[in-house]
Image 1 (cartoon, one colour):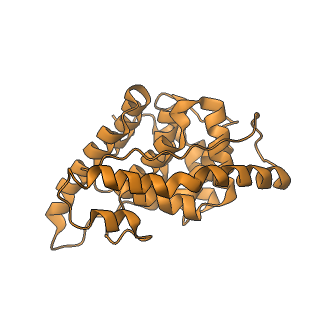
Image 2 (tube, rainbow, N blue to C red):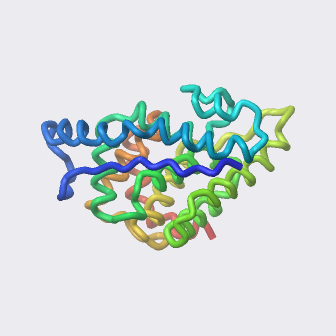
Length: 233
């Protein structure tokens, strides 16, 4: 499977505000954008490292093409899509989350659990996505989690070569994304409520990955986390 070491190092302000002012968001966005210039060059570096070891036809074009060229969006393609299309609110929220919670909230890991939630719910057990978030917080091994997820999802997809694949509900995907981020970034146990200061940050991050989710749906998912205490047992 692909070994992905994509680094999006985002730097922001020194304090957390629930609703950054427009001027501050603009200044932060410019600084963040400057740090993102190396994002695509890192994708090319990944391609060069793995193409000699993995016999995958079209690997380089898959990493280079804007749309990926495949039905299943791979992790680097998903990262590229978010970075290219996410609103300023996502970038600010990501920066503030990492400032508040440190390395477990870094953008590569956040994007990984968002990708798993978006592409995996309905195909792999949701408890496996939460378990991956728990492991990642401890092991910091992003490659093995990508490999495990791809293997599990690929095994299921083989069963649906000639028929329509199952599709998870949007509400379920959002719930898993919220719970996985709480597990990974905040270190919360299952059923623990989302801290008030973190809720708006998680809201803007989740909305970037699930733009079709309404504000109400995301807000409900955040506020109802404690009701999902037994959801992944």
